[in-house]
Amino acid sequence: MQGKKVGFIGAGNMARSIISGLVESGYSAADIVVSNRSIDKLMALQEELGVNITTDNDAVLAFSDIIVLAVKPQIMADVLAQLDDTLVDDSKVFMSIAAGIKLARLGTMLPAAKRWVRAMPNTPSSVGKGMTGLIATDNVSAEDQNACGELMAAVGEILWVREETKIDGVIAAAGSAPAYFFLFLEAMQSEAENMGFSHEDARLLVQQAMLGAAHMVVANPDTELSTLRENVTSKGGTTAQALATFTAGELPALVSKAMQAAVQRAEQMSNEF
Ligand SMILES: NC(=O)C1=CN([C@@H]2O[C@H](COP(=O)(O)OP(=O)(O)OC[C@H]3O[C@@H](n4cnc5c(N)ncnc54)[C@H](O)[C@@H]3O)[C@@H](O)[C@H]2O)C=CC1
Ligand SMILES: O=C(O)[C@@H]1CCC=N1
Image (tube, rainbow, N blue to C red; front, side):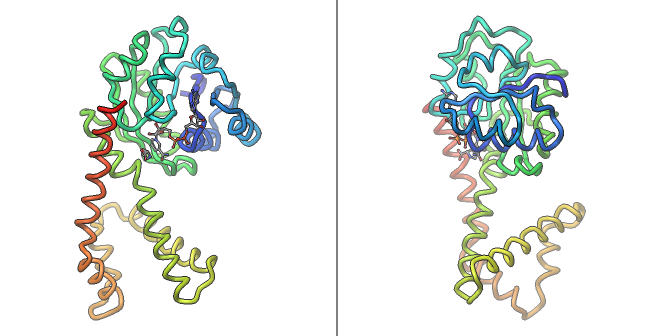
């Protein structure tokens, strides 16, 4: 994978997360180029990470073996239509990270490009703890699939899926999921502040609890999550009271509903863009 030239079109939150994770993991910044419509985000990326920058998407196309399409789904069609398709050749692989745009639709947006990968990452990629689901068109060689997999594995865990509908499941379970946890932590921080802790102390309490819980989950792969929960829950104790409150509020059903809403939105987007 090292040595492949990787280009990013779009330098927003997700591209920045992947690029910073890649460079942190030791990937050569000289082999990375990033384009964006405006220059300010690019200047910051170049200063912090030493990557090549340009405002010309065709320059990314010309430079790169793997082109990561990291613009909003709404503008993907326009961005691809404006590329100089004479620069596309069979050696290049296009990897879209956009939610809700299927492989077949991507192929119609840039017909000259034949080899496509969809990746669904998440922002923890910026700290090497990303989770990315991937799927490729049949004509992407095993070598190129490996290269795309390694690219995303440099910033976290990867999971190849066989059916494209599963990419929407990846969005619901991992792509959007950091925001669910942030919302939960925000609510906890706010309540800890109501209990008299400073903003900073409240954050320390809740973030360390979450970090510890996450580490326990990862360190005990053979232990069911329900067992980890039960181990915290003393009979007649405080945790039991808190959990009963969540159950009364139908938290599990609410979580299912929220994840289904993410999937439905991805399906809607696939008809809109
Ligand atoms: N933010 C997230 O957690 C995740 C986002 N995604 C996907 O990643 C993609 C990007 O999302 P974000 O980074 O959150 O959005 P963003 O809005 O932060 O970034 C998009 C970037 O594209 C740039 N851009 C706009 N027009 C352009 C053009 N013509 N040429 C080059 N660059 C242009 C914008 O200036 C902006 O910097 C979306 O398709 C989204 O579905 C996927 C997984 C997770
Ligand atoms: O909210 C979104 O549409 C993107 C996809 C997954 C996370 N952010």
